[in-house]
Image 1 (cartoon, each protein chain N blue to C red):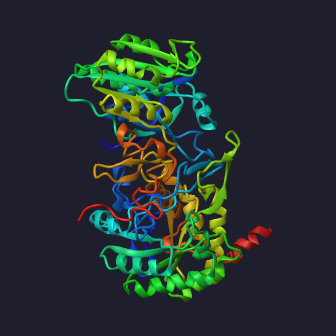
Image 2 (tube, each protein chain N blue to C red):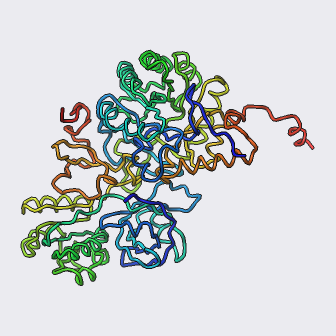
Length: 287
Length: 319
């Protein structure tokens, strides 16, 4: 369903450890939402000098008040700081839901959900959808420190098993989520891995899943300007069905991709064999 | 009575004067999720190149005060895919199409002009002489009157006779007027201005350039006064030449400012990134502003700021 622009009202805003969680009444977006979608939030108010929306993943939607969406974010600059300063009943301009959601398996398979930092946020509506289909759900959540692991409690409640990791050992196992990945894949007999995390983690997740011969669905976080597919700024090299690498937009062609299709080593570059690369491939395959 | 909003690109009539700016609405499809694109005066396409182009590395955008820098570098599918996939979609949706073309040599521009103008549904061709993000900066045609003139005359020769040619100029020159004149003398029916202005930002946290490409094009309200100045100067020097005005238009008032300075239509660019409905909103606001000012026809407002104030108004000021 097509995205909409809505002026939502802030229902709640609270700090969750190192992050902020905000619930906004946004009916049009809530009713169209599928796990993996994100939303583009205007920041700074009407007369702002900040032109670009901030693209945030949707953590949860609820039917209350005609439909609410919950956003989880960390303060990284002026825009997100402004967002964290919103109070109950403030209005917020949202465009969404945007992007392609996580694809769901047809059969009740075993699913391993991997999240790093606030990348865990979109995994919970995914877990709901998977469990509704009879899938087994296991979690690995990690972060640099305990206050940056998002949703550990909820994961423990929902998951068949939940493995927590921190770089400093302040919660769960010391290390990164990818250190634990091979064991958990084996223990949970995972058929598919879903991951939302920084690019470096996704790269390892995709590599480990490939070694185990199972698909990985990765949700990437690239800097976006428009979120709706017109600006061409959030591109990354992805191999298509025809074997040709293209610079595709993570906002409309993603943010969820098949892990083995993303050329993680080449993110941030223009691979020489990509379609349209300087001195490289100049034509589409086909007749 | 609501004002007559019909606008003209040379001899081509448009239903209204609000267009998308090249590179800010891709090929129209994405915006059609939000509104019917036939409500636009025209869609100006992302610049079409002869071969597919992958563009420049990421990060490609950086936000700056009231503006943004981009270094997308003309990523696009190439003219063949454009003519096969995107142009038919646009014409089927009933919106006039202004095709922006970009080449790295005079021959490439000529070839693009020939292929694009041969298709039906092309209202005009905009010659992008001024993209700041191509690797080969030496060939920024809009920086040099001679080079710009060579490209425009080749495009005019190869374009179908009834498709008007608009040359898109850069504000990054000492004097925009001689280049505008050279383009018109070479056969351009009109001018588009301004393209993004070359800029740069350094991230003080990473202590490196914010964009992978180093420099990028600055757009958004930050550049609007520069756009107004260029349009003003060129309209004053070449009053009969139609100008597609663009540069930081985010509201109806901004659009009117460019029109009063001499633009006959306006393109909306960066504002679309913030508000997918920007074009539709700006058109409505512009219509209201004209009505409030008692302007019956949009065409009456073009270049109005150049005219001296009526005598009684100036006398009032002396009282």
